[in-house]
Image 1 (tube, rainbow, N blue to C red):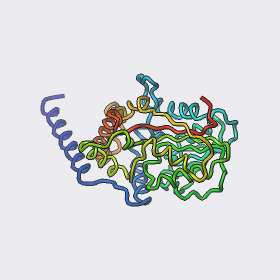
Image 2: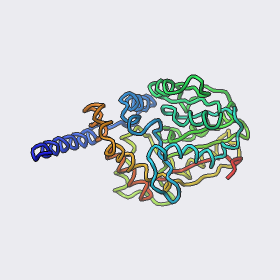
Image 3: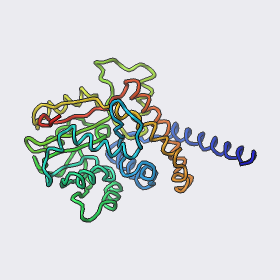
Image 4: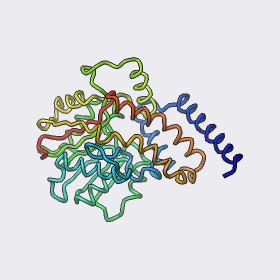
Length: 316
């Protein structure tokens, strides 16, 4: 590449970065209602950027503890199997009914159906996600999808052998109602498996000025009304009127932390994927990068934690 071409590329990249930062600072996706969450996920699904780069899983990956270098997409699939084992879902027989709350485009649901033989209903507030999940799922699969609000599940009490929810909680304005609905539809003695992004509990230290600024951006960029702490959501589950027994928790921050940088690096490793989607995809990727970096910083410094929650019947 000659000097003028290199200079032209550098100028174009600089302009794109500046444009991305401007969009990030001037426009946000703050939570206003469930409609704002649905709109955000409809947009993320329809532009196909995340799916093209990250595959069928939009959740974090599991890199082991201590973490080791892993293929980005393999780590995401490994997360599903790790949570299945930790929560005790692998103790359930084939044919068991599972509700996946916040199913995305169905990656986890398809693994639960294909590898464990479960009958899975995946729900999302986003019509675009449900349509895409349905399109990606083979007709013979034992999973199906529906548009539904996690805070108002149109499902019977004690309907499911297991309830699964990954990274949906931050979008819930009423954490107690979220816990109540998860447990309401779970059969007595059923298996609960929840994984979420959680803030540091105030009892473990109030946020300083820098942390408050970071937290503001983490909330307003991705339609989050508030993050629960691990202690706080544990209390929500234990205090629920549908409480099914003791709840056990763990912190998977170390095992999932590499996901944030890998989420950015995937675009660098596969630039052709972004470029084929057009200039808007490049701008969108640049827009998401500051939030991904702030998420990494927040989880690395202890402002955020990755909590997992399971029902007492689970086996280690």
